[in-house]
Length: 202
Image (tube, rainbow, N blue to C red; front, side, top):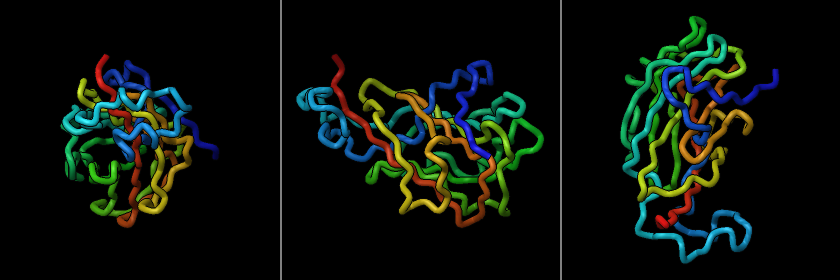
């Protein structure tokens, strides 16, 4: 079954900003690493004193298209290390009755510029339901001192669970992760690498 990306509706519990979880912040502050056309970013406009993502408010929720609804949300602040512990994520019950509720750790690695979803704490193996979209939405409220999210990539060397690239979507303030039909166990890990430009305010 071909999986599709779905942008959850704003009516579903909270204003969900467009998908952005696949953008990991490698090369933060280095305009030459962004893969942009020459001249699209003036290197002199990149403020090296700015943090990329650190300190921004972040919200995590579960969304399922089967019942067109979102779970309750968890709120935190981005920092290096564990941001959403498994015990908390395990309370994000599927808004539909047929979905599992895996307890996973969500970590941010500032040195490598990565977001890590670690399934090692799940009580048992399982599988996300077949649906147009069944997964997680990460919404970030970037501060003026944060960077602009430019790109996202699945780190295949540090992931045992590899989604289809079409199942990861983002914009400058949100990341959608569609786990529809994916099997997981305690060895499952998904690592995302983000690229940010630290642009000075105009």
